[in-house]
Length: 205
Image (cartoon, rainbow, N blue to C red):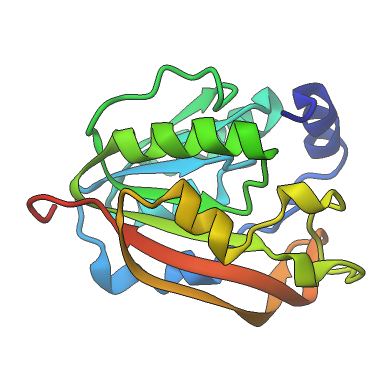
């Protein structure tokens, strides 16, 4: 995985790299959310998605490998008395809880294929029966655009990669196309993304 120290430096130098508002696709899940649901926000940077989920009344665990980003998320959660726990961890080495979450938010977390496989397996195990996994990531069509995303093609999301990663879950939707991002200085303008929603079998949460 990438260098956590590099991300610490980025967040320290420029707070709000990806804005304060939640990802719009995650925000569109609001009708599916209920207070008291347990949510896991992966690679949550400075906590923008986890904090939004907590403001909806969900009990949130946010995980990122940047201690600087997670400290910022924890500080905002404390200031707002929000139910968010911020953890600094490498997702490929994290001790994933089993069946603990009603929602996993995987928003713009781009990993090499081997790391993605490990993380996806952990995320699927962490979902409770009936739990939802929400994904947004850049696709190979993003290459050459200035609106964000990694430059290494193997880190980008394809429908095939999503199906391989989450094949054990029920696919509710998986869409590819152009969106307009307005997420801080790093995600601005038209972008090519994959958005998907999956559900774990069993009783609904």
